[in-house]
Length: 467
Image 1 (cartoon, rainbow, N blue to C red):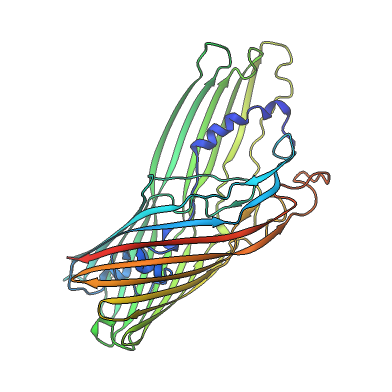
Image 2: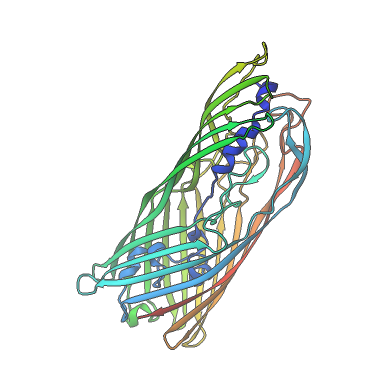
């Protein structure tokens, strides 16, 4: 790759304006569990989760028989990442800058604090118990917070803005009789298209101006679901009752496209510069997923859950902001002021992603008719085939997910509480010799070595009632 010439480096501030307007978030609140009951079970709910959040967990369960026609849930949840600090590593070198510098990396990612709302409605009980549900999550402190993160500096790629966005799920379910239920859902996302026109002045008394326009368009990604219950009576609550559930979620990605045109008196009165370029990013990405679950009422007071999730991360769309085909036109007031001017397009590090399987197990124990305990465990592998010892530093350590919770019923009101502890396995990343340009005199960004890992602490509560 041709190295940027010195004059072009002076325009990094133009690119930073673009980066401020196009940001990214990844993944899905459903990975942790909508509502405290699902979260306490580690989202092991594809086969048995008959509550207000069924529009996400399994739309087929919306049609499960119930004496009430409306089920409502509302709750709060928080997830706090405490990621391993990374210090004294190379953060700039001759590939990305005109200096070599070592420093600490920002790993103080924001805490997720949001509310989940779920509702199910029995629309036509007489017609296959046709039912509708809607589930939504919204951050409390802001409508959304997103951030592209770093393209070359060490970055926990799925954690910086994870779940810091609103999410809406809708679904319908039907009872085909004989214990067979089917459903379909929609995962609603959006795409952003914007344009910016910028004129920068450096002369005294002359104002800089900028105009920005953008449009947001909704997009939908479908989901299909089925549940089969082998009922021994008592609505599936009798000992020996079992159920199987399957959910297929199609991939969803929300792209951002932004065109920027700038006119700048960038070198005082030496030269006028026009720069035009487009940029795009995947605002967030949810992979194709298949969830297969089973529940077994193995005693009058206990139910066991098993689930295996498949997620197709091999098609992952990187969050890196990509600047495409920049063009520049320089009009010099002084001969030679525009010599050797070149603005290079983006070059993002290449990573090898892999599909993953996530095994989960959970248990729900009724201590009394009013009080229930819940436990869940899952193991989530990394989406990367190998550690980032070469160019780039995207991180996603494997994660052990430990969850627990309690539920309490009183006069038609259901209250659930949960706590979560997710441990990221410690990884040691040692960079291979040489920098990104193949120069042995300098080390790669992230060099010479560092450790990645950390913990995620979470908890919350949910209130539910039927009408």
